[in-house]
Image 1 (cartoon, rainbow, N blue to C red):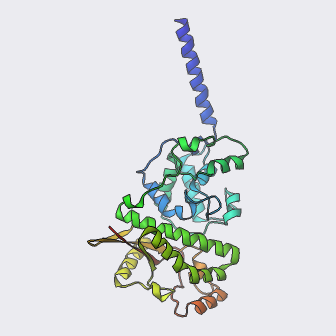
Image 2: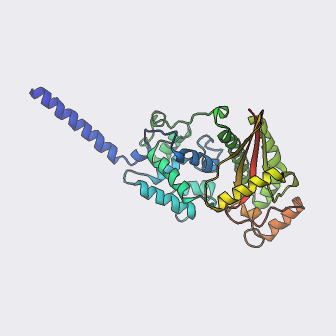
Image 3: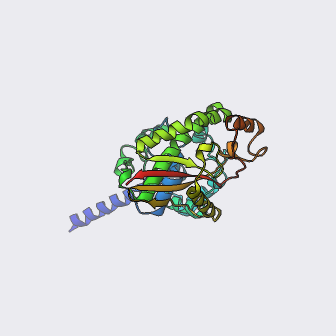
Length: 334
């Protein structure tokens, strides 16, 4: 009996020690083992955040830190969900260098362009990030450990055990709307990465030249990759080839109402016998306004002259933040 009591005491002591150790681990909340595919914040994060914060882009081939890095810089063992959500709301409302908790990312990628998201969208994304394990790039483990100068936290293979290693999705297995959205967002990521790189390294005027020469070839190449017709169309086109037809104009106006009501947009899906067409809005953020904003306010005179030179019939100016500038039009075979 004494031996049994002694063993129970030792077992209890070891469990208590392990529990206390986990509680004191500053990264315990950033490495949740539970993974959710059904939480609405997951899809919202992939739709709204993965353009810049993708879990699949390489370490030297991205335009922002991965979401797992953001989670680990904002959450420790003492952080509450309310505090994390509040911090996310505050940053997205006013991204600036002085308040950045990731100065290394700001130095590498610049301050995130200001853009608008419904408050509820940010709350759901924050809840998902706080409560569940999220995907991480394969290179992130070593990078994070090197940055911290140790092998604690999520290192030593824990990322794979926690279900956060990136897994590839077969787009053809997705519902029609989600599949079309993936094609649009993948194309947007390619265009965005090249555009932001041009702005950061060469300036706005060179970025305009990039759009003039490379936007169509890059979009066409993504059409080939995904075996789909991928277009960007607008009611106020810069290039006449991007002019929306009457049906597309209806969808543009429908999305304008959604965005004006501070609602989360969902893809519009139209099916024919053999094909599927998917539409999704293109909205403006602060970076867009450098070339699409109001003259002499967010769009300077030099840039405006360059636009008129490259696009004599341009109509794509006068926008403010969070306006629908056009839509993605995706067509693919069933």
